Length: 122
View 1: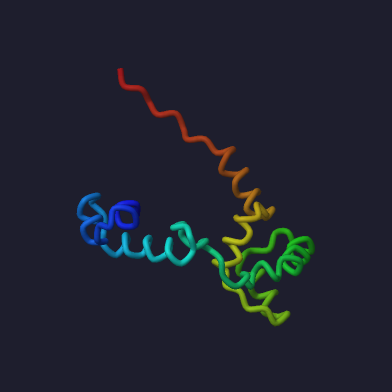
View 2: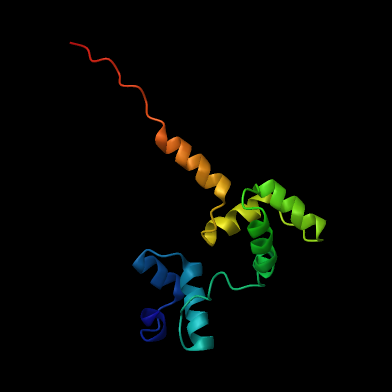
C-alpha cells in the first residue's frame, strides 16, 4: 500500500513488484482510503445461529433423557416446533462439550477392549 499511496505507483505495478494479485492491492488501497486501515472485515459476523437460540430447550431435553441420540433429539425438538438437523445438533453438542452418556458408554467399552497379542515369529 505504501508503494501506491506514498510512491504513487499504480496498483498493478505494486502487485507485480511484490508478487501479489492486482485485485488484492486495489482492495487494500480502497479499504485504506475509505476506513483509514486495511484490516479485513470480521469473519463469522452474521445473524445469530438458530441452534444457539434453542440451547436451554436442548439442555432440558438431554437432562430428561441423557442417552438420547442426535436423531431422537432432532425428533423431540421437531415435536416442539423446532426444526434442526442431526448434524447441526452434533456440531452444537461438540462445540459446547456436551457429551451424551450414550457416547461416553461407547467410549468406555472401546477403551476396555484390547487386541489379542500377536504371535511373535522367532
